[in-house]
Length: 104
Image 1: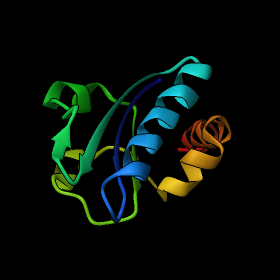
Image 2: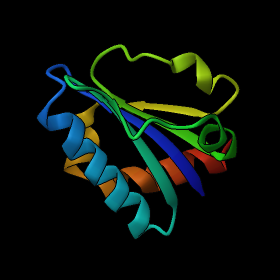
Image 3: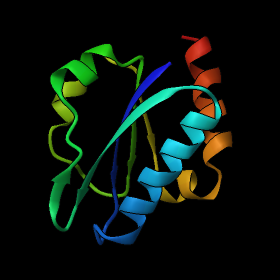
Image 4: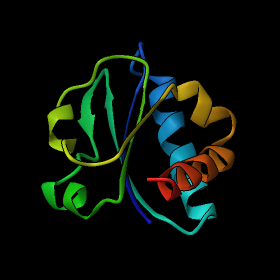
């Protein structure tokens, strides 16, 4: 599965980057490709290209705040989650994503 994600927390510092790392580890542990954009205090990093979004099977928004550019995901399955959830149990979270997509 190809996953694109955005991570953003209220402070835009620690949880944003920890969530990014955990999403990558969780997806890789389950054999998926993932690209994760961060929107933090220093702006947007690892910005997702339109090709990344077009190729994605699912969009994960691990966010605690409103993010910019959400309209680019229109038409894609979107899963919203708090950063805390992916930080605490990234592999289990990705497994839940797999199961939810199987029912679509």
